[in-house]
Amino acid sequence: MESRKRKRWSLAIGLLAVLGIAGFLILSPRPEPTYNGKPLSEWAQQLGPPGWDPEEARPAITAIGTKALPYLVKWVRFEPSYWRFKADSYVKSLPPRLRESRLTQRIVYGDRSRAVAAASAFAVFGPDAGPVIPELEGIFRASTNNFVRANIVFSLRGIGPEAVHALANIAATKAFGSIILTTVDRGRYGTNVDAFTPTLVSYLRGDDIRLARIGALGFTRLQPAPERSVPALIAALERPDIVLRCSVCEALGNYGTQARAALPALDRLYSEAKNGTQLSRAAKVAIMRITGEPPE
Image (cartoon, rainbow, N blue to C red; front, side, top):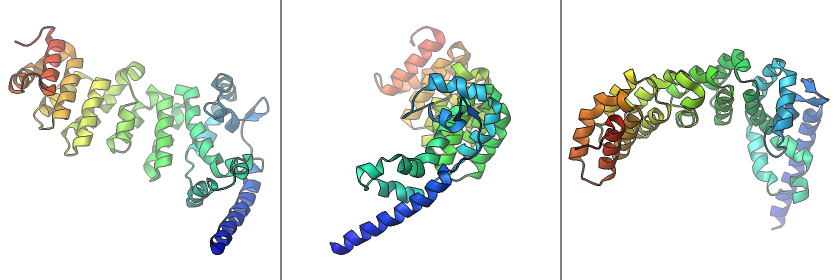
């Protein structure tokens, strides 16, 4: 019991020493753009909790202008080190006053919070952040850290349609594909979503059934140009996975009359599936959406 207490105190003293050194480094002033006396990093952190005040933060970041972009790129690539993960787990065992102190929060979580805030800030610039898209994609490809990669995806999504090709390239690596394909939508990205067609087709045809299902959902959500999409979806109706085939039916139905080529396969599926089953209902709905009439 006594040795456990000594070990606990040793860890606490060691952590405080690290906090002290890191605090000196972190709290040392570093040049970054400011607006009304407040640095860019603080404005960016107001875009989300806990200091939520986006209505004030957005105009301030806009006023700073595109000179903020190099700083956002630098911050968004932050990779939490091993000691931070260890400190994160240990901080939870500290007394509340020490655990919740501003210094502890800033040292242990500061760079991580700033990285997340920087990713949010790209949305303020939208297409004006276009010049840094290749750099962001390069950071994603060079990193193996999921925290960094998730932040890059979030940054690119915030930039909008101009970043769709970079997002499609990333989805093609099968990394974060499900996140990208379930958050990109045709309403915002328009015909730019056609860039995802090769990736969706490869997902649909691949051996990984999970990715195939993601591909079918991607077609449902994005509805890229039918010329390549509809033939790939028709072929996927032959795969044995019922969940996948139901999703494919939904995707085909979304194309309406543009998917008339799928009617023979859908009619066959409807007649072969047991009446009232999930698959027969999916095929029936798809046929009705394509023809405007129920199947015979």
